[in-house]
Structures are given as C-alpha cells and as structure tokens.
Length: 110
Length: 118
Image (cartoon, rainbow over all chains, first blue to last red; front, side):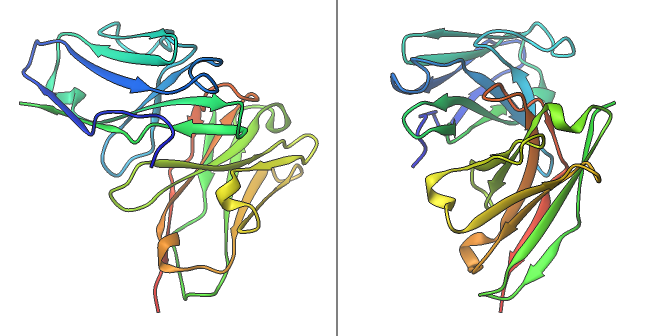
C-alpha cells in the first residue's frame, strides 16, 4: 500500500489531454513539494516535474502539474504515442520521515 | 555530464547478502545525497534510504531498518547499498539516485537486478 494514491491506469487517444491524480495527506503533499517521474519499461525513472509544477528544461511543455492542499495532478496535453509509460508522484513525508511514492499510473495511448 | 553507474546483476541464495555499488561522476560527489530505491517485478517504486557522502550520515525507511546498510567511499565517489538476510521478496531492481536533501531525485543510475533464488 503506497502512501500516495494514484489511479492504476489512465488512457487517451493521440492529441487528447489526460490527467493523473495523486492524493496524499498533510504530512506529505500538504507540507512539502511534489515531484513526478516518468518510467519506460526496463529503464530508470526520469524526473519530469519538480517543486510541484516546474519542468526541467528538456521536458516538453505538454507536461504540466499542479497541487492543491493534499492532492496533486499531472496533465499531459497533445497526447503522443511516445508518452505511453508509467508515471509516479513523490513527496517527502515529515511523519516518517522519508520519501514516499505513489503506486504509479500506467498511461496507455490508444 | 552527471552519471551514476551501478554494478551488475546479482543472483543470490536465500539468507545471503548482496552489496550494490553506485559510482558517481560529472559532479562533486559530496554535494548531493545518494538515495536507494527499489522496484520489485511489475511493482512500483519504494524508497529505501539515503547517505550523505560528506558526513556519512544515513537515513532509512522504517521497513528497511536493520535490513539495509548504505555506505560511501569519498575517495572512489561511490555509494554502496548492502541488503542482508535475502528472501525471494528482495528480488527487485535497485536504483541509486542523487538528491539535494529532500529535493527530488534528479539523476538515476541504470538499475541493478538482484535475483534471490535457491
């Protein structure tokens, strides 16, 4: 059971916009920033979003994120086939203390 | 460029220990913590702990306390993760990743598959 809760899967067609949610609590998302990671099969995760909504320079602006209270979301617009991957949210949990991840969401591009 | 290069795949018997290395290059080793994250087959990411290469201080997820030991060698710019009393449930890919304190994990190693099998 992951500390952060994500839907196991989402899907969309090319060009669509999809949103992946991430639910936490006051001790993690509610008190620290959220980051998002993208992982393709057989490869290491890659940092996609940091500090709730900041993209590293190499990440396309089709990827955006937001946070409100104890929840966060990742939005992918103009969906492309190469976006098909697993996505994880993460934060720091003050009560543990330690890093926590969501269970991951598999994005399928139909 | 920043690189974290991990040691190769391991096959171990139940009850044994395994030590995985993570060699850093392209930045000043002591300025970023090294974290360890594992991923069991078909499962999500699970944070295990960290080491501060400058001080040697460590922190572990409660689940892994007593199970894992994370160390470093500043002269080799290398961090190590040792897992003891292996069971089949420890079969997973183990990743190292760097971070500045509690900030996100910005660079990751390629992963090391540890298989525990009799």
